[in-house]
Image (cartoon, rainbow, N blue to C red; front, side):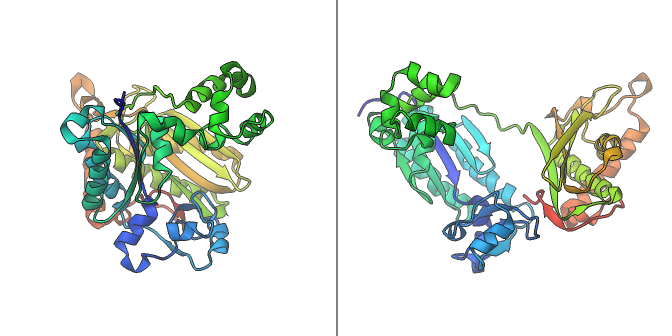
Length: 405
């Protein structure tokens, strides 16, 4: 067998959100389950394989999914269960290799090239990961693709789901790729497929046989990269970066909110939740963003620095809420009924000495210390009794709250 230039794994947890629900609620196993909002504005976050058999899928309006599968059960995972199970799975990945690149909360690339000598052949490493993920999570399965690069590893993981394992050895690359339709290459959409079809090119093998300049002419500057992928070539490294670029919460309402005060209240709740997550993960933020979606699906975003004077990062609830409120007050002059409202923070850094605003002669501001004490007390109560146990006074409404995972 020819040597592997690299050994890359793509690991994808199977129907992750729905599988967590079915694991925790045994009575739902084997039944069609939809995870997401149940109102008329609800959206499916995940569908179990039983529900997918009826055409249900993620990002689908709940009403559409229920028409496709009237017997589907709408459920939500327990508080913190999605994040907890994700951390268990990623813990397995990181015991195998430090080169782990998350793609989402339930999906990652792993470069195990350096682990082969210690842990065995590529297939054995993949089998170990599947087994240990199952044990660490108490019964969740994952599908693993093994190949010489990221493009091929992702292709492989999609060939045998759920609970599958496919290895594409270097000498089998063209054997596997050539019969596939060109749409299997990420970035080739319907327009690209139609353009290639006009040349009689429908499979990756036929695309590979074309001269590079012809592909570039048909698909533009992206064409050269597509042609390399059709040959099974992908030099992208696995980048082990688990740091979140932003933290946020958003909520879709069962009915458009027409009262600015109600929207203001939900915005305040989101600011509290975001600040609490910053403190939990020992992170500070520099920028706050609000997101507003109207009933016609028009979406706007506005952002600003949290601290105009010093541009210091912070995790304080009052500072984040003040910045979000300022954005809201500037926008509310053109207020229209709102379908969705969200708050996020970015410009993240590790918590450290910069988190405390300094007063005269370098002493911490008394108000800053008082606020930190309040935040710590609120965090402790939320950890013990749930995040809704202590809140600022505000109005709340039922909706599709995307913060539950």
